[in-house]
Image (cartoon, rainbow, N blue to C red):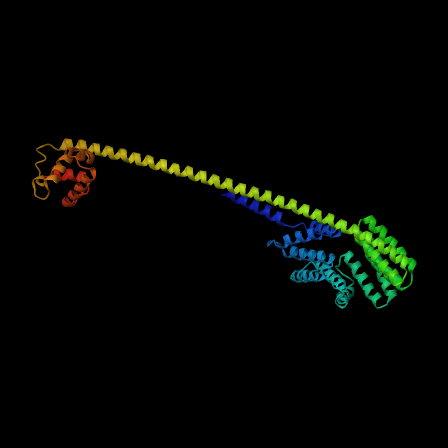
Length: 407
């Protein structure tokens, strides 16, 4: 019993440990997939996790948060905001994890901003800025400052916008260098408004080089779209045409990469399905083998019981034969022609046939032997004896012998 409890506890602890999610690993995987355009793969993984009823409150917050980030990366801001609201509600019930709550608010501000809900975004940014972005991840902090700068830009407060952009650029250079193009494109817009075209071109070259270095094609497309629009609005047809042609080429590459990503997703999905099929096959094989073992054990138990019952029945028959043999010997020893001169045999209580049967019983004959002697069936003999037992108020042959020995 103690061994059983020990192994059960060991299994429970092992299983419980296996169920804990490596949130850092999942987060890195989701962000990597999103950067590479494998949004469907991210969505599938996160939906599978959300279906798990055993997720802790912290894990539910994180998975909903990552789902929001995934939808925001494909410009589905309504879905992103919906998942963020769910994540925010779940996080509110947690007494700690202030950094998680701060990151949720930052992501919410970005989603509102990208969805052109600038006033909602600004409310969140101002509230966080008043607290000096405390508990906020440095990467998010950079984006909040950058968005704050963009709001200043929209209000033509260019000096404040430039100050915020430089602050955000400094943070990103330190904590996430490959994301600097997000600020540089904003600076391109600012420099264009200030007629600093040389700085616009410089920022574009830096965006393009870093995007190539970090292999983030979307940043190169983002920068090229912006510089094309800048020169288009300035009616510089040559540059606008050149950048438009480059943009078509980049979009073609991006589409190809998306197709490759889709192929990768489909291939991975196929492999996952194959793994699931193999897992199911293994499960059903285990079930079938277990059922077969149970059936075999059942058959073995059945034949064992049957054999045991047969042995008992055989022993019972042998005992009965021995008893009949003893009765036969007893009757032969106890009865003679003189003994049979009994009051029962001489009375009118029994018929002549019944008296004849009693005499044969007294000689130690069995029902079968009596039936053969009288040329009738054994069932007929049994029928007569039932009547005799009822008339004499007896239950078995031994009592017959007792009655027959009384004068």
